[in-house]
Length: 440
Image (tube, rainbow, N blue to C red; front, side, top):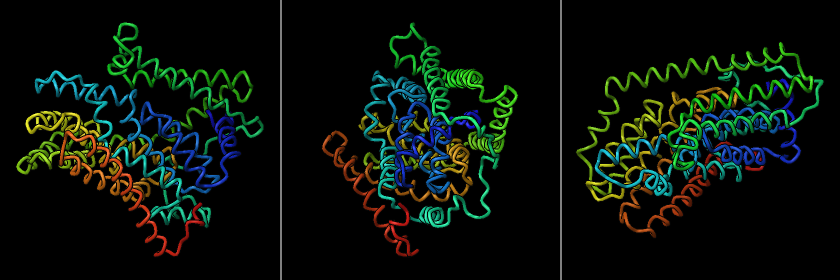
């Protein structure tokens, strides 16, 4: 419907008037991804729909655009003080603390775990570094070089997950950015209000308590319906299109989601099968014999990664591993917030790499990218930051109580991410005879 009204094109034109290069477009996409912090699903939908025309006009490859969307969805939402993830994570942490006999406030643990979410922090850092420096490596470098030099945003034979449906646009109407911005403001505002209201509203002790107890899916449904109604009235008043044309646009938008829904159903089915045969429990059990205090955080990161990668769900991983991580931390003298941090960030890492993850699928969908091309080009970047996160968990385990060690780990990890990016990009560009100037 936003496409029909010309709102998306108006918004894209407003950005294009200020962003003249592919590098500028990538930076703008990354910043917008960080602004939409309250839910990873909403992030992929809003950023993908709003900036896809911009990325196309600036010759940013579909692989790169889907990577930007994916890297600023779950990694951002899991760190946000107010988000749909917050309610779930605090709930799981609270249950684990209660079962372990601890009276520590779960939200306190959540907040103190943020500096130790190394994968999430470094993943966001990497996407900014890639956008600012125009450095890429591996399959992503080839995809970006193809897009800049040939104008082909996808490889020959690629099948975009959106199904290749061409959305209708009313060419004769003025392209007003407000026709996209106002419905999105309604979506965000009503969704946040819905989270607060469904979580207790005025009866809750605080806004954070209300968000923690919210029915996020119901709230997002309220926001979506409200945004659709507002868009209908806006476009009708402006005489942009008839009701029949707007309903056709609505149905065409729904058609874009059919293939993605089928993939998601398959992903959930595989996840349910893994749960029923005890895959996750088996992975956790076979790792218990090698546990020593300095290895526990790094090992929990790896375990969480493999469970999330295999099942495609970071939330399911948290529910499985956090009840084990909390008592392990207490038993071995590891601060609880450090014990759960590798689980929270390791789940995001595995989810980020998994081809059956819902957010990975949705990133491909709303970027209009071939799904497996997105997975293959993103994987080296995720493995880079994941490996750095692994070594940083080893580093902080030297002294769990040292604040200085924590600062060193963050600074050293950030430096390593940049250094490895430079080394790998230089090698890839030299091998393929590509210069940075061709990618800007």
